[in-house]
Image (tube, rainbow, N blue to C red):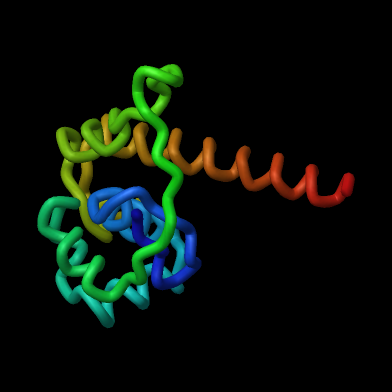
Length: 131
């Protein structure tokens, strides 16, 4: 079992993934996710996934989440981006704010994440148009 995002209903495997999903969406500029966090988890922008997870899961519906065993697939899921963000300046709204003071490394990580997200959205849009 996992949790459905209370904003967009995207299934997440556990509370930590749900917390990351909500926070990253908010940091990347999704106003709906940010508003939800502001209302249901005030101070979210100063917390990491370990602190945020129990706060957001209490508002999320449990949902089916397909379990894949590590010995049956390549291990393609990792948390390097989350780890790098934490090391480079942490979590929070200020991490996504270009005017906030942050190190060059953190800025580069967020810029790359934005480029990757935009590319994925563009590719999804192109696939939708071809259908």
